[in-house]
Amino acid sequence: MNSRTKILISLMILIFCGSMLWGESYGEKTAANLKAKGWNPSLIVILISTLPLVELRGSIPVAIAVLGMPWQKAVALSILGNMLPIPFLLLLLEWFFKMISRYKWGKKFTDWMYNRTRNKGKVVERYEEIGLAIYVGIPLPGTGGWTGSLAAKIFGLPFAKSLLWIFIGVLIAATLVTLLTLLGVAIF
Image (cartoon, rainbow, N blue to C red):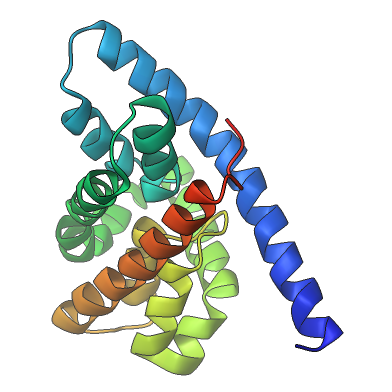
C-alpha cells in the first residue's frame, strides 16, 4: 500500500470518527429520551436510522454500545430504518423542491441543496449507478441514503436502479460502520 493510499484511508477514518461523534451524541440523546419514555429499543434504532444526517452511521453504534444489542440485530434494524424513507424521497423530492421553490427562502434552500449535492456528487455524475452506491456507501458527513436520493434525482437516474444502488450503498455503509464500531474506533 503506497503512502498516498495510507493517508487517504487515515483521513477517511478521522472524518468518519468526527461525524460519528456528532451523530452519536445526537443519537445517544434521542435513544436515552425515547428509552426513558418506554419505547422499544428496536423502534428506537429504526427511528434513529431514518433521520437525515444521522442515518445508520449513528444508529448502529447507538444500538450496539448504548442499547446493548447484538451487532446482527443492530445492523438489520438500521438497514431497515435507513431504507424506509428512500422510496418516498425518490418519488417526492422533486415535487417537494418545486413546491417550496415558490417562496424566496425555499428557492434559496433548493438552490443550495442542488449545488451542494452536485458538487459532492461528482462520483455519481461520473459513474452513475455504481457511483451512487459508492457515494451512499462511504460513511462521510453529507453522504448517505438521503443525499443519495437527491443525487439520483439530480443526475436523472431511474427510480428502480436508484433504489437498488442506494440499497447496495447502505449495505456498504452498514458494513464499514459495524466494523469500525466493533473495532472500537467509534468513541462514545
